[in-house]
Image (cartoon, rainbow, N blue to C red; front, side, top):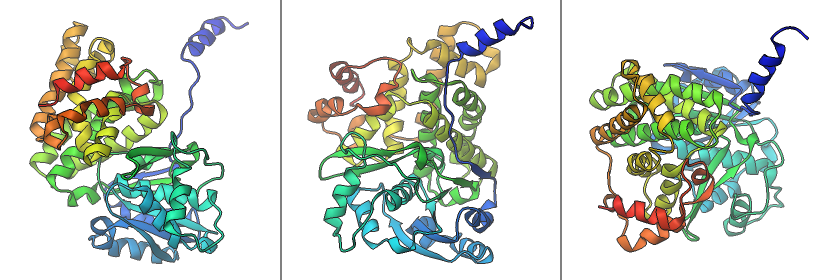
Length: 413
């Protein structure tokens, strides 16, 4: 045996096994929207577009997108328009009009925020995993959608979805790099994920200039969402080495950039830092996990219709206080990554990091109390009971509904 090999093998084994998934193609940088045709042509022969009114249909970038697709010889058609966070009905309505007989060679290109990309990912997955006989109604297709959602359905994604090219126009959710699509059902009062490793987009084309159209409130909420994802994936009980390394690269940039872009929306460097942070937050959460802030945010969205980024912004400071002792070393590590000269007392550094995030949320002007997003006090019990799922399982501190109810009461008003 070569000297030292045994020690090296033991050190390697101590890391434990892990998987790593991310889009095989990532193109990042200002102006790269002009490459959308080239990227799509790598994956298929024609394009099905999904976008929102502002992000695609009436956007300044639409002409550039169409010209790029034409130059690459990629015929295209719009198959769905995003209208906020996707619902079961919305996905079913898109499936009802989908030209299933033209699936061969189709590439689904999503241009928009997280909701648009989630809608596209769900359509792409069901286009290959749900055979249609023709003539189905939207109502009948709703059952098909629900049956593919974790926690409420029984069917899994077993066939590769159509390839998805994700083009985010906000800097927040990181869904351009994740393996799930979040779908809500207002009628049945749930928000669940359609999830599979095969649902990771085949390409992420991230052009920070596309976020210039975001207003201040969207920029703030989506930015806090990305920051929440970076922090929770770093401290969660399922943390992994590669996601943690990505967080240490992206989070200090994001914490410096968000205040800058809120003061000057045209700051292209700050926009790029936030788009970079969102992308890496998606990779991090997809390969690790999340925590309390996201666990409560999903239920808050169901109950109050609170946009996901706003819900995360409300919950992030209280989640950090809740996990302060259990995640003290990790929170201190994050503070030392941002301010290396503060290296020293771990407890003080962890507390300084929590204070840093509280100050950032205050500067961003996001809601700080549950009452501010329309939650009634008599619904706190429901919120605590329904804040479970995959995100909450990753929280460093295990929280029974009764304990969570006490915590939520403290942040109510």
